[in-house]
Length: 145
Image (cartoon, rainbow, N blue to C red; front, side, top):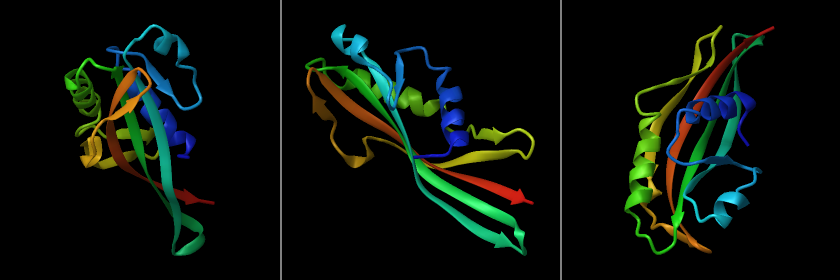
């Protein structure tokens, strides 16, 4: 899982999304499923959290990398266009707009890669179809003791 700084940064930016409900990992979505509503299920994964010394053992650079998956869930049988449009609009919330994770140090998330579908077809779930918008991100944190 990603650090709280990354989770909070994505959750804050996704707060600007009003088109559909946003559901994060380990949150309940059953009310939307029961109503057959469109929604976005978000997973924020950290792949690595690596440390490098910057001269002294107390001065370190931490590099965290991961991927955020935004699964656009639309009712089955309704086609894929709405899911594609929503996935594109979700990515537009992040394109060329770094997210500051620490206002004191100015640390931010760098998002060099984004994808709709990541080269794979949409997936069918019971009563739903999903297209995934994904963002590969990096965060640097410098610590000094």
